[in-house]
Length: 112
Length: 114
Image (cartoon, rainbow over all chains, first blue to last red; front, side, top):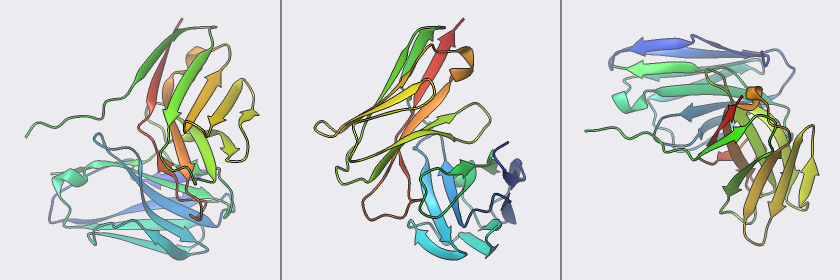
């Protein structure tokens, strides 16, 4: 266990559904991230939050909407996804300014 | 259409041998270079990092070498064990980028034969 917990572990959703992924860490970290890992591309950074403020958005489509209510929780709200969005979504956290990021086990998302 | 998976380089070594995993990077201005290990069904796990002003750093059973002249990074694992079987990713933090803005390479799959 890395101390970063993601739920659910697996999710199957239709293209018209709305769902949310949850990430939680109690490591005292102040930076949290969403990454996408698909079979076709290397790990891709999606969003970065430092001290609850979004500091990076790597040209992610608006059908992905992040939310960081506090430094321990991070959500990824999903709506009207496409089949090509099927991937492993990984959450990570770190201390701001440190290179070591701790990853959760990911949510395996399948869009049908 | 047919989906094509990401082709991962593979490395197969005998238990007890040393492993060398290589990575080429493109951004000569990156501040840090990092190695991550990802076991099946798990998220990536930090192994070791090296700052751009260094050329070698050692950890427990691992050594990272940085050759800025040819933009090459390598991870050496001494006395490889079955538990080292995983996909290994190199990552870089671009100069001026936030510390969390990791740019990952494609990964190398390491298989350890008992």
